[in-house]
Length: 75
Image 1 (spheres, rainbow, N blue to C red):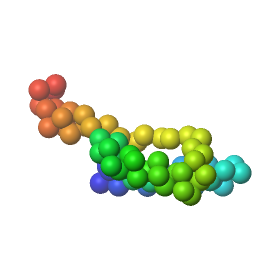
Image 2: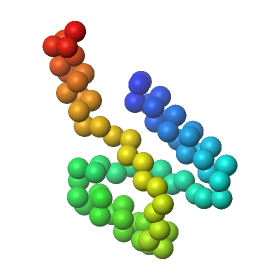
Image 3: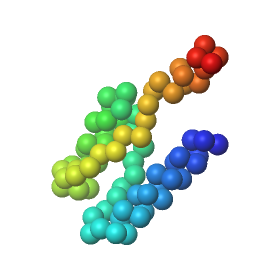
């Protein structure tokens, strides 16, 4: 549930930014730990945006599962 709420908030924020600027926000799912997905992302930017990428927001942190799974050790 927490993930879905955060995803909704991110999409809402992107929509608001797009509405308030002359720019365009394009949310893209990409696992930055997967070299092929990163390559595909930049290929997409090259094709669809003429290579222009002004801002890249990373909304990921791999350590979350470790923190959640080991939370009893930190209580």
